[in-house]
Image (cartoon, rainbow, N blue to C red; front, side, top):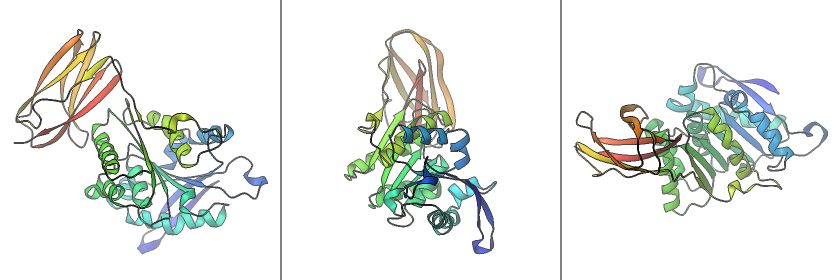
Amino acid sequence: DTLTLVNNKNFTTTNHKVNVYLPPGYENSNEHFPVAFFNDGSFYINGGSAINILDNLIYEKRIKPIIGVFVDYSPGNRSKEYATEPDRYIDFFNTILVPYIDANYRTIPDGYNRALIGLSFGGNVSALIANSVKDMYKNCGLHSGAIWPRNFEAQTKIIQNDWGIKYYLVWGTYEPALMELGITVRDSLTAKGYQNFKWGQYYQGHTMGFWRGVTDNFLEYFFPGENLTSINTQNEIILDESFQLNQNYPNPFNPETTISYSLKESGFVQIKIYDVLGREIQTLINSYKSPGNHNEVFNASKLPSGNYFYSMQFGGKFVTKKMSLIK
């Protein structure tokens, strides 16, 4: 089903395209189903192959049959609704969208049978929605969640709220700022003994292909079926033994630090420096190297104090680490 829902509260009107996926056999049964809500809905359908993923997971009984609701931001307002001014969109979600879906489709209308899934800023607003009304949502998946707007509001709520929400977070090593956000959430939740979360770190960048490849992990974790795969039995970090990137020394530093690495075989090496927003600052090295240990000196005399990231690419794989400049 494709429909348009209108948010006309507070003297402003916005239109949101909504596509509703119904599981096979829906029309011929009286069964009620869990619901997965996807922000950036058209991205997931067109670039993320979400309909095929749902069909295959249900057919293989890796997840329960579910309803998929793919929600679009109003035209031209993605950053506003998902990042800088999300309150009105969150209210639309809670008071218009979800009640409409529950009233017009055979859902199981409780938090344990609702999931929110989003990518980048869509992950940010998904986390904010999940933490807006206690017990309304109990599952939340973030593809490279950009959870930093409004002074890290979403990140703070994920860490501080003890609402029993199940989280699944994934990030790539080639998106250093978002990787740092994910690692902070992972380490903070682990330190407080929070049990309801999983995470994955991959040699990937900020791409739909990456997110498409791990959407099934989210759905299997939230709505497990009879033939659940082993992918959700442990957290994932993709390692590589062909090279090693070491922590810079000294760290913190001012203004120079040494970045060392070792190679088990010869090959092309690239190391880039990024700021906390993921903007490239400098290409430190971009050349062919022989096996063995190597050192590169990074001079930050022209940069302000703060955290930075250095990312190494070798053999198609990436590793990223954080360093601190204190002047």
